[in-house]
Length: 148
Image (cartoon, rainbow, N blue to C red; front, side):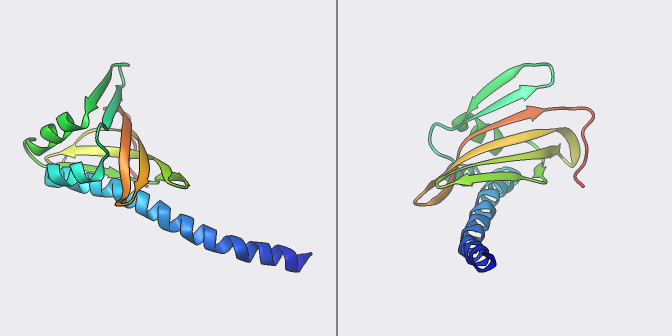
């Protein structure tokens, strides 16, 4: 029985390694989005998302906004000052060619904190790699906790 369990465990090991690779790739795609935002590189953002993607925000007062990716790219590309978004402790679920990343984040403009919240990013794996299919996030301006 012990040998059977060991054999089964060994068969699972490549799947875990493959899953770890995909989790790293999904996390890397979201980090590339943040890097492109900091660089105000609209072309880089466009390369990371699927056509028709939108961003949905939920503010602390309950107000929601939905922004088409084209408007988001325009806003980021023409933003004044420096932009920095960082995430920590991402939770990633991957099943085949679909993935979701859930992570706390904070956002800074010109080095000053503006808000924090939770990012939820849905991704699909295409022949070109992982692409963002949708992004939802909360916007909280008080009581935010810094990453550990």
